[in-house]
Length: 120
Image (tube, rainbow, N blue to C red; front, side, top):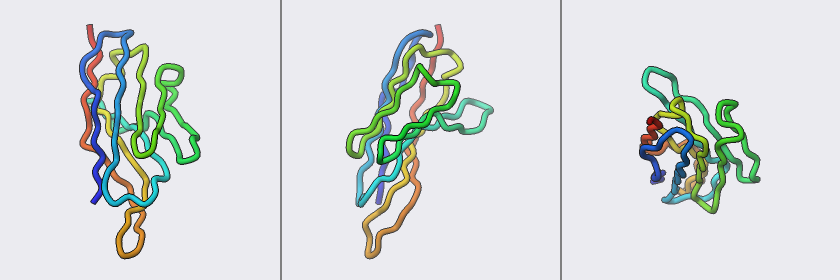
């Protein structure tokens, strides 16, 4: 059993900052990559940022220079600066990892999502 628990969402004025956290727990053997996706009303879920076990990062063009993804052990963070109204969405944590069972099993897991609202 694996759980991804997000925290840190909320409301912020344009230009402000928020920091999201996502902690992975359970019978985890290894985490290959973790990332953040978001889904705005009426839109498809999109990748915001991702980080591999080697520290390689990838960002959506719309957040480059404003958002920073980082990871410490089984927790991934998303520092969001210079927030814009178009950043309003539900943000989901995602992880590619291996679960310890009788034999290790690789899988992709999602958190429950946290709402981020940017408005004045």
